[in-house]
Image (cartoon, rainbow, N blue to C red; front, side, top):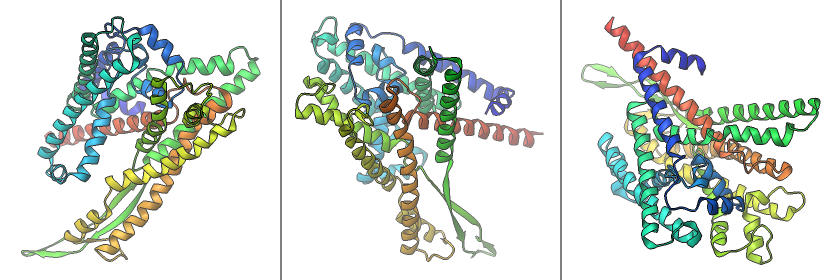
Amino acid sequence: MFKTLRNALQIADIRKKLIFTFFIIVIVRFGCQIPTPGINSEYIRAWWEGQTSSAFNFFNTITGSSFTTMSVFALSISPYITSSIIVQLLTIAIPKLEELQKEGEEGRKVITKITRYITVALALIQSVSMAIGFGPNYLLNYTWYNVALVGIIMTAGSAVLMWLGEQITDRGVGNGISIILLVNIISSLPSDFQTLYAHFIQGKSIALGAVAAVLILSLLVLLVVFVVYLQGGERRIPVQYAKKVQGRKMVGGQSSNIPMKVNTAGVIPVIFASSLLSFPGIIGSFMGINATKPTTTAGHIIKGLSQNSWCNLDEPIYSLGLLLYLALLFFFAYFYTSISFNPLEIANNMKKQGGFIPGIRPGKPTSDYLNKVLNYIVFIGAIGLMVIAVVPILTFGLTGVGKQLSFLGTSLIIIVGVILETLKQIESMMLVRYYKGFLND
């Protein structure tokens, strides 16, 4: 990784892109520190400390902790992520969007424009809903004018972040939205390591502190290596194209492959499963239901659905919610893969182009074969996601540390995935620069 960056800095064009990207990152982090006018930050801080919902924890992580301070970037790019997922799902249900997706660059521009509009609408709905849902204590002066003003400011902040991400994509190193998400997550690393130090090392003897440090580092290294293999793992299906005559020439006969990633759905299943289980807790918090020390049936159910209640040896009954969480993980892994990877469409395209999988007849047999392989791969990917998602839950349940750590679970997949993808982008730019220089010479 460091060798790639060092080589990239030696090339003027890429160096400019890296400097521009760094400049945008500084603007993003600066905006995360600017408080939204009119919000009672003390009330938000006190409210946050009493929350047990894992959805709020993850949301605060991807906003770079700006949600707890209610900065102008408090919503971060979460409306854009939600909008992208909605548009992707709608392309399956609406034929017009599906046609646009297949039209190439022009179609993608129209879909991008639709995504932007939905992002702004979602940001406005979220910001105004928070102002109304939190109640009079949320604002220093609770009036309809201030509610609308806070909604407009936060919506503008989310739109600016979306624009900054697009600038990184166009004029920087690419993957702008992902890089902003990555920077927000790793901004909490210093406080996370301080938490680990205070809990496991501080006040211990030198021997015990050294053993704890080695164990923590070893666990982190193992998790990173596991995520790297999970993100990079793929099954390549060989494809052979038949030879055919065009004019006086014989064309075709090439061999290719269909790469099928092990973790096809990425972090989407974890996000969907966590959000779905956290939804009752969010509603309950606004209704005043006590899920920390429940006295009602609804309170016990909400506490059982909270990740912070699982794997607690003192209250094992609440760990039943973990089984539901794992079941949802598998369901969303298969569901999202089924809408993003269509074996029948791939088989038909291969047949039209004269391609076939060795030993498999074209058409429906090819589709059935791809579907069989896909189900097997998705199962392995879902197991991998389950392992990564359960680690922070076990950590918090057994040691009491985990809610504050932002780099475990889903966040670790995002960190590793974005870093690997960005390095690939830089390497591809270096490769293009090398070939251009070779041709010019």
